[in-house]
Image 1: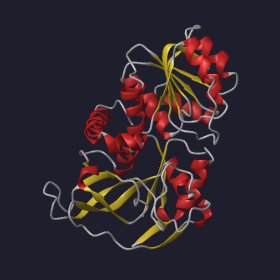
Image 2: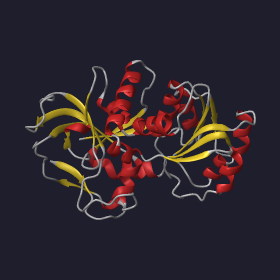
Image 3: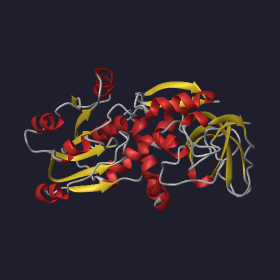
Image 4: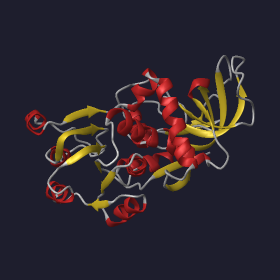
Length: 322
């Protein structure tokens, strides 16, 4: 089968589209013929050796896949060939066929596309965990979402509204701001003069929960815009710069800085993650959340797609398809 292969920790251009051994369904393994493969910012970090983990080389990147079951191992009794499923994995999803453990596989309800299923896994899963478990977002609170046109940002807008919050979305261009507004944001801002804009938008009270997958210089403006007992969620550093935090701000303004590492959460609390996914699937069925799929591209185009994601040029979710 064909797959995208990282043979060294190197620039994205060095990824290889080539033959790779097809997975075998042994033990509790489920083999899935990929119909949609989710593209995520950490995928590009991983292959460059810039992520929190460094897998043995060579490896196939990718953490989301949706499609149909091809075969199951002898320890799997509740899935069969032909079932429509989606799955999470640490690695291995940029391939025509993906092998994952049964505990990482979710059956898809009727009417959910493979592309939407991929978006719900990592992107919406991250934002849901961030806002529900880490931010403890409450109805009536004000949520500020940076990177609001990315997949986690759009997810945070929709999940924030589902949880009853007033949502302020921050995005860099008029096109991205329009997408954020269409996803349900109550107020849409750009990054210029963000501190002053947030002060005006919150009538001087500050932000209750801030969702920040961007980092960089914007983190400073955000940290100075937090309200009393606020929660500033550190989700990632898409700007490429890890900010320094003046801890005196947390003392004076009485807010918390909270780390959000969704990958560790899924590993350490798989039952809670499964409950989160069921809630997301229910919200999807009820029309409360709906992923914005920007485009579907051939698996062989993975390098160019990852470059675009890392240049922060993507709006919503990008999908690869074998």
